[in-house]
Image (tube, rainbow, N blue to C red; front, top):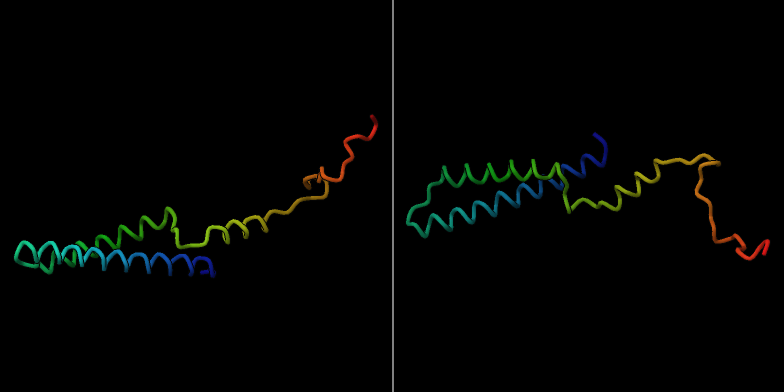
Length: 97
């Protein structure tokens, strides 16, 4: 597993843990208002939320620096001399007129 993958899964894990905690707090709060906390329900809802968070992370994680990924992708592209983009700033547009 390369460094990018480790970083991605670390961010996905942190995001999932936050989601699990938020779900547990919301479920406990809601259940306590109703008078009884069903701990199996709290646990199952929280674990399910964590799994959904990990699956959602596969689509993209805002916490992962997308600019860094794009910069690395650009470095992977190599131009041959003939294919290199031309710099039009040096051209004299009045030349020949």
